[in-house]
Amino acid sequence: MKSLDDILKMAANVQDELQKAQANLDTIEVEGVSGGGLVKVKASAKGRIIGVDIDESLLNPSEKQMLEDLIAAALNDARAKADAASNSEMSKMTAGLPLPPGFKLPF
Picture 1 (cartoon, helix red, strand yellow):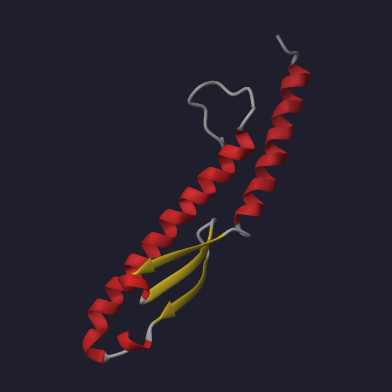
Picture 2 (cartoon, one colour):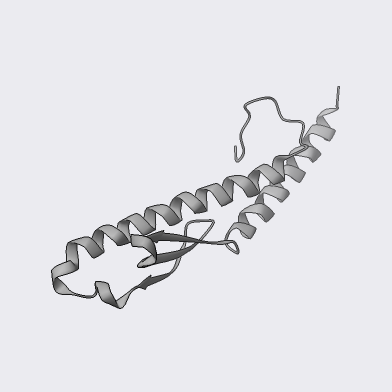
């Protein structure tokens, strides 16, 4: 069994690695797409929206509702991809740590 000092040092190391991983998430970009590529949303793995690209063919007042739906779909797609990228990065960070089964970070 490890001493309390060893456990505290390990917890501090895990916290440092977690902070590094969180900072790295903002550098990972994902792209959400809808309407067969007519609407694209770029986001970081942290979920920060970086940019939106809308095909000019959708810039018609009669297409307003469809455009709004496509933007929402692209945002949701980007968010899902950001979550997947975030989970993947966090899994890499926790790989090899002696954590109990089912234990999740951050605390």
